[in-house]
Image (cartoon, rainbow, N blue to C red; front, top):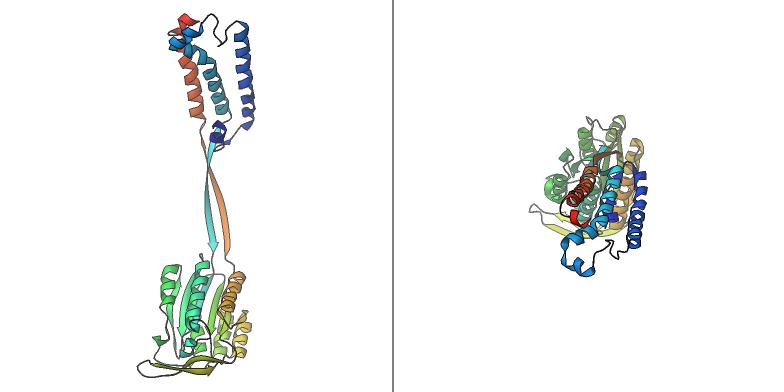
Amino acid sequence: MIILFLTNYQFEDPWFLILLLLVPVILVKYLRTARKQGSELGLPGIESDQVKRNWKIWLKILQPYFTCIALALMIVALARPQEIEKEEEIKAEGIDIFLTMDLSISMLAKDFEPNRLEASKQVALEFIEKRSFDRIGLSIFSGDAFTQCPLTSDHRVLKEFVQDLNVFMFESTGTAIGMGLSSALNRLKDSQAKSKVVILLTDGKNNAGYINPELAASLAKELGIRVYTIGVGTEGEALGPINIDRNNNIRMGMTRVEIDEKLLREIAATTGGRYFRATNLESLQAVYDNINKMEKTVMEVTVIKHKSDHFRPFLLIGLGIILLFLILDLSLLRSIN
């Protein structure tokens, strides 16, 4: 038990603990000496029936054991037991990231379960969860574009915005890729972060908006912003919306996937990013995992140690035991000596 107790401490002068080996030696030597003097219990001339009746004799019998305990405690005090408290100070140089998501009506296609949009939201939420030290923003686009959430480190609020995304947030239809990218760039241009990134996800071709995607890509390059582009959708035809009326009633049918991979590759190449194609949920998760690995947050962890001495309790208890028996020897136990 004593050994287990001591393992909670670190010792400033641990070599003093070697002296603990002397404690059992001293005790054994005392007991041998007592036996040579003719006492089975270590007290010459005391009968066993006296021992049973007299508590003072029991104190005298136990005195050498308590003395050894006191000696052991004082040796531990000499070794200076200390409790170490550790604190971690984390300095993180985060990355400013903008998620730019396509909310065109075609994102309701069911080649992903339950559809492209919901699958994209799910994976985006998982990505946000992994980027603890980064500021992340959200811009969305369809026939137009706007910032849904500015750069923030409050990921709880950001995730609520992502969860609420739907294709009915825009009055104008279409796929304004240049507008979506520009919306993100407008928020990142004043960022002081050393690394700035846009993750642009779409399932179509640029067919709306007044900003050319190539122009937006050139601007991103000048601002030092990398753009990772993601094309979402299976090859060939997929079940998806083919018409929507004024009451937002959607008619579903078979429609072809039309992703402008050439444009998305050019945007990525111009800005030093990379283009990915995701044809199912697993490959989309792999895309975000790859981006997560490529864009590492720089972290500096400093471990601060605080030491507090705990030798006083050991010393005081040891001295207290010796003083107690010294007083007893001069008073209550004096007649037994």
